[in-house]
Amino acid sequence: MAFDGAFAEKPRLKAYEVEYAVQSNANLLRTQQREVEQVATILGLSTEDAATLLRYFRWNKEKLFERYMDSPETVLRAAGVSTTAEANQAVMLAKNVQTSDGEPFMCDICCDDDPTMETVCVTCGHRFCMTCYVHYLRQKIRDEGESRRIECPQDKCNVIVDEKTVERLVDADTNRRYRELLNRTFVDDNDFLRWCPAPDCEYAIECHIPSTSLTSIVPTVQCHCSYKFCFGCGIADHQPAICAVVKRWLKKCEDDSETANWISAHTKECPKCQSTIEKNGGCNHMTCRKCRHEFCWVCMGPWSEHGTSWYNCNRYDERSSAEARESQTQSRVSLERYLHYYNRYANHEQSARLDQDLYLKTEKKMEEMQQTSDLSWIEVQFLKKAVDVTVQCRMTLKWTYAFAFYLQRANETEIFEDNQRDLEMATEQLSELLEKPLEREKIAQLRQAVLDKSVYVKQRREILLEDTAKGLLDGRWSFFIDLK
Image 1 (cartoon, rainbow, N blue to C red):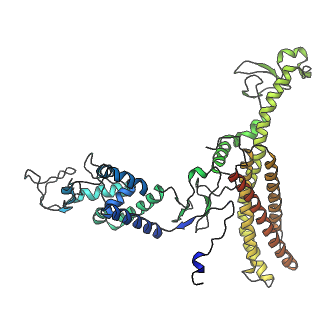
Image 2: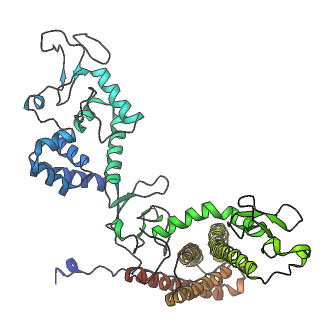
Image 3: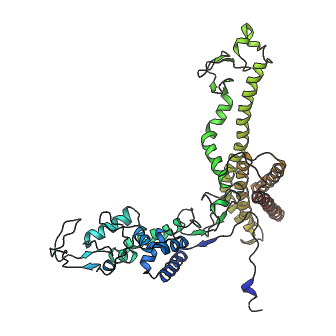
């Protein structure tokens, strides 16, 4: 019985949820130290050399061990670790140094040959004066933001200046910056770690979802700072749309949204070459500047068939006119379809931004409710939670339209649209409740109505996300774009 807790099952995740962990800087440092010590013990290297090897292999231990066992010296040289015994025994700091032929030492950077100056070298044996070496390190760390691969100042020498040397030479602020950069490279090099993109947030998220699974999973994670984002692409939560759909949709919106409405209202396509044409005069006799095709602006038929009765378009039902209309219709339908989804996408995005202003109104309403009723401050928090639910559902609904735009029509599509409709209706009803003016005698009824509707809206959102996520995992959804 004493061990029951040790084997307690984790709460079952919903289909649209993924396992992840939020890592602090302290946790990241401990993980790096543990990995370095393990590699140093197995390979019989110093911790500094083991750290250099791990960073060279982007913290992939399996790849490191495999390559190292095949050819240790080749791997060490490539990683920037000196392999000669003489170099490893070299003194790092020294004074009164002489060259091999007995001549006084001269720094190759500043050409100073003062015998009393302090000099520095790492395991490669290339020695420079302390002032130049420190300036070199400060420039690399502070100006260039380098930390992982700070090489010896000697030309064509790839030996890495290890952490211990950097710590010993630079000032405290530069060393602190150096440690921060090393910490960032650890996260950047790890496929299963990502920094939280929220401003001034110092947490990282660990999520073991491979990039190959992003066509069937939307790995939404939430940091300790409360920011929710997609671990796959790093942008704000975009469930239920997968990353490939989001990328295509955002690019299309960037390219098309600002001009689509104007194009729809003021232009038509040439029936022959499909070039977009703007009518800039009163005459309906149009000549395409690209292919020189002459046609009627009203019926889109060839102008040659109109004769003197062009204004009646009496040849409107001829085959050639029908073909032109069909081509014109296809182009217009495509644009109208895009506008249908984009307008609803943009509407929910704007509504979510407007709902942000609702937080300020809600706080005042909560204070008023507390003063005019016997409800405590904790009990009136239901209003703020309801606004949270509304904003969250607005963002979900926004991305359902991007998802639906690229979705192939099938029987399952109608189920998706039904779930989308139910969530949209419920969200609008909850939003309307939150906008209602506060009446003292109806506070209890309002509280109960908001609580009930909030629960229902959350359930509708879960149903939509659950069904969509299961459809992605089962391969039920088909898209008319390449998702790879």
